[in-house]
Length: 314
Ligand SMILES: NC(=O)c1ccc[n+]([C@@H]2O[C@H](COP(=O)([O-])OP(=O)(O)OC[C@H]3O[C@@H](n4cnc5c(N)ncnc54)[C@H](O)[C@@H]3O)[C@@H](O)[C@H]2O)c1
Image 1 (cartoon, rainbow, N blue to C red):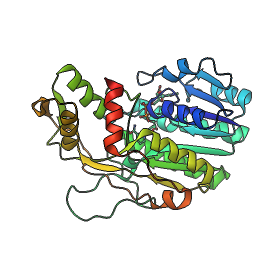
Image 2: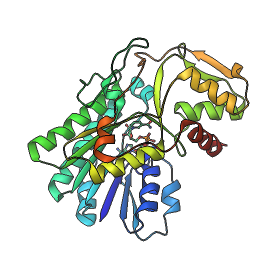
Image 3: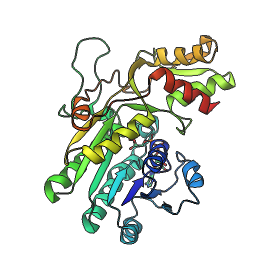
Image 4: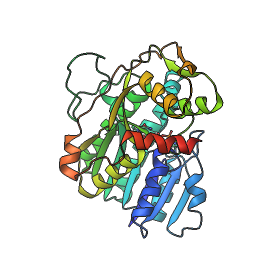
């Protein structure tokens, strides 16, 4: 069995490869990544002597190279983590987001169609549903909630989801999609919120928090997301979308304060900065389908996960 992991040198892709290697020692794993600024070489170096691991420095938008790789490796399963993933950068310019997140996904779908695949799994985000008001009793988003992305990053992810679903309907491609809340844990790029808070504390620098800090995000330890994807590959229904839910929902300010307290740093480091344009207020998703179909439930409580994450950045 051969598993191709695109974006395998990014935060979640790296953790997913380590998870799958630990769980399935005989699985052949091909990591495909063009090594953007957001990538890291941790897994590439760690598995360099593993005969069942191959790293290919390839851009998923490069159709010829992707076809050549498929010809050589004939993957049974492809999990697509490759993406431009930082909302702030998508506000500065959307082109690279459209290129990788939409066109790149299209190239991978075409390759799967051409060479055959047992499963194409698209890694998506809860951000495709847009946000909820901060207050009120709006129900959480389910997989059939309308897509209503609030920024160019989430719009490009929503576009990719629709493309993936269309290949299922039009071509009968065996696909699944998962839409996860925010992940945290080792190997995340320093530009994201939790690494920014931890690194600021470690350096005694101000911790930037957007607006009034009341925006709410759901958090899931990255290994629990990896377990969800593994279970969807095994037990998920073809053509289906799965929300991957949080263990905790926190306001950004609560999260920054919690990390300060755990690291015994002064909360005075927290500095409010001008809000992100179009900043999503609150996310909340229902992941009953994932639990019912696959038996998934997260194992890492936020208190344990954040402790491991702080230790990692230290
Ligand atoms: N991090 C989160 O909290 C979160 C939550 C929900 C969903 N997601 C989704 O999970 C996936 C992975 O997120 P992440 O946080 O690990 O992102 P990341 O930015 O850490 O990693 C993305 C990886 O993709 C690679 N990549 C980018 N463009 C590429 C291209 N054209 N060809 C080949 N490789 C390319 C990068 O080099 C990088 O290694 C993304 O699709 C993201 O939308 C992330």
